Image: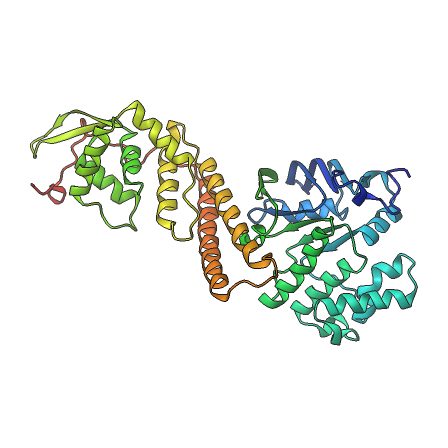
Length: 239
Length: 202
């Protein structure tokens, strides 16, 4: 199978293959440089914390890695696929199937009840409604939102919306999760629940890239990549 | 205790007498208890004995006669070695971390790299914090004694507090690289005594 086709990349058979490979990433917001040549490789079974002061470029890095922002220079490879060589549909498919993304502000579809909102990655990927909803129910139960499946996002608290976003990111059992402050708005119990689920991806041989300003959370990871002024200040192995 | 190394750092900018060292120390570490003269002289005596400092003369300028000390090559080496070792990440080593950081900031012209000192300390802390969390979350059987868990949590949160301070220190450092030393008056050329400054006679 061509490595540039996003269908069913068999990365877990090759644990040495980096699940994320960012090379020379540069990005500017207008004239303000946000990333200045960042390199990062993340192997299977690894959780990486991306930390740094506000404005150091960590959220931008996650957005570029997720394909939500285009780099000005450099390349992004996820699970062996160079994002620049995929068309929009292929990129979207890769994200739905194999890459879970949790952003800071929930981003659930406003009008959909939670059951379908969380099932959306599967539905968009062609899954039948029944199995997609079953998977969604299981994911919602996993984050303690079994009773909220009929609620729409406006009816949720900030913490519930964040948990639902985690459930949606995990519903397709991705090999890679890219998360931007995934538990910042959660209480300790909710955070513990969400983190255990995210670490389940690592335990299954996948990878987790976590943007956080929380040192305790960073210290739970296997590596810390610390950014300063858009560059890598240090890349520490914590194991 | 790092008091010997702090004395060495205070001698980096030039020879000083004991009273000048005490004053400079108290300016560097305003939150600590002021140094007692007895401690200054005991420390200098130890540094001279170990070859890290030497007596280079006396100085009076109308006041009491004072012995002037200088750092030696071995003292410089000792200081840089100390700066390169992160403080043990025990959660109760705040004072040691402050000492190392402040000394690093004041010693940048002598080969000390404050950013590197901060980064090494952060690494030591994060690794210890990871161990503490793994003991609580990944114990075989998942059952960790509550007392152990609470003690680990206490250590974890203290280490987190240290890290936040280190982050602030690193940011401040980047925003405003300090001059080599703000207290580099040399004892041999600058009168340092004023009526309030009189060193008590032993």
